[in-house]
View 1 (cartoon, helix red, strand yellow):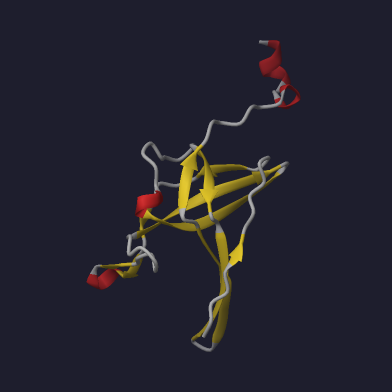
View 2 (tube, one colour):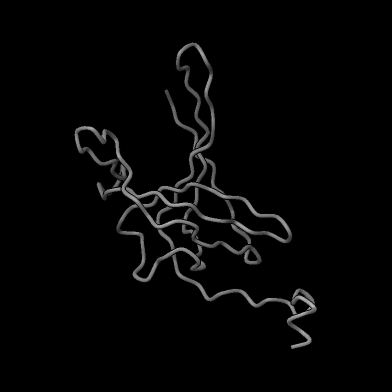
Length: 128
């Protein structure tokens, strides 16, 4: 069965922040078998990214090759996903349909924290 990969374009105005530390992605955790990148063979990790556009935010669980994780990556850091793709999936388990979207990127690049617009500062902070 063919897999579908849909490129996800991240706008320059989109802010992406790391929400959780990266953890190993397992193919078979019971037997200690890690999931690996199809092309490079690098072990995969997963982490949660918060994607913020305007007044909306979404949490995405994203797989990234371990080689694509920069030094200094931790929750709260702003990043730019490189080659982000979405892959829809579905399966039947116990006669129930389960479906979702898996996200994957080639790497994460650290970026500077976004500037907060002056009108977004709370009135109490502005008076101080």
